[in-house]
Amino acid sequence: MHLYTNSQSNMKPSNADQARRFIISCFLILIFLFMLASINQVRFRDTLQCSPATTTIIDNSISPTTPSHTNNNSTPDNLRILIGILTLPDQYLRRHLLRLVYGTQPPPSGAKIEVKFIFCNLTKEDQKILVALEIMRYDDVIILNCKENMNKGKTLSYFSSLPELLLDDVVSAYPPYHYVMKTDDDTYLRLNSLVESLKPLPREDLYYGYVIPCRSMDPFVQYMSGMGYLVSWDIVEWIRDSEIPRKQFEGPEDKVFGEWMREGRKGKNRYNAKWSMYNFPEPPTACTHELWPDTTAVHLLKNQEKWIRTLKYFNVTHRLRPSKLYHIP
Image (cartoon, rainbow, N blue to C red):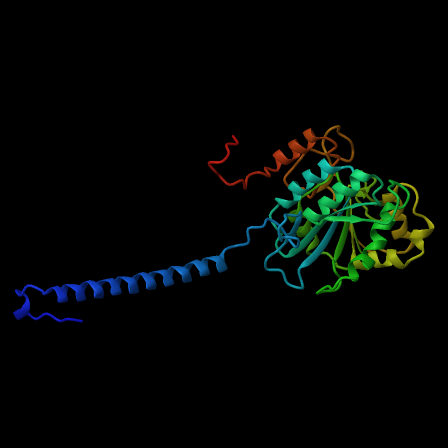
C-alpha cells in the first residue's frame, strides 16, 4: 500500500500510482463483498435451522397433512391416544371434513393423538382406487379384515385387530397408545378438552364415555354411548385374547361392549364424561343440551348445517391468518 505524507499531499499522483490505487480499491471492495456474503449465508442458515415446521400436523406431521396431533415437547410420559372413527368407505366427503376439523385443532399439550378412519374390506373398484389415493395422501386409514356391518362385529374387529397391527411395527414405547377410542363420523371431538379430562385418570382398566341411559350418572349401570368411548390399552389386549367378546358380538355394538366389560369384570376405573359430551341440541331429548364452552364432544351432526352451527359456535376459524390473498368477513 502506498503511504502519502503531508509533504507529498500536493504532488500530483502518477499514472502508476493511480493504477495501484484502483487495483487496491477493487481488492478491498471484493474482500468486503465476500465478508458480507459470508455473514448473510450464516444468518440464512441459522434462520432455516430455527424456523418452525411448516406442516400442520402431528405424528403424521410430515407432508402431506394428516389429522394427527403431536406435542413438540413430547416425552415418554405424555399421553398417547388413538382415535378410531368408524365410517364407511364411500364417505369421502365426510372424511374430508373431519380431516379439516381435526387437522386444524391446536396440538394438545402433553399428548400425542392420532386420528384414523376405520372400515372393513373394500368391495368396489372405485373404492380400491380412491381409498388407495387417500392412503397415499394422508396415511390415516385402517382397513379391517371383515365385511362391512353395523351390528355384527365391526367393533370387535376394530379393537381385537389393533395389537397385531400396531405391535408388529417397531415402536419406541409400550404400550403404543395408553388409550384407544371408538367414535362416530357424526361426532365432533375437541381434542384439548379430551386430553385435559384424561390427564388425572388411571392408565389401566379405564372405561370412559357418556353413560347410557341418558338420565343416569352411574357409569356402572349399563354402558357408554357410541358417540365416543375410550378404553385403556390393557383392555384392548384383553379383547384380543378373551373368549367373552367372541361368544357375543352381534347386536347393538356399544351395548354389547358394555356387556363384555361387565362379564369380564373389566373397566373397574370408569369415567362419566357427561355433560361435556352430549347430542346436538336439536331435537331436544334427555341426551342433549345447548352448546356450551365446557365441551368434549358433540354427537349427531348428521348434516352440514349442524356441523357449521357447531364449528361456528366454537369459533374454529379464529386462528385464520390475515392475507391479501383472500377476504372472509
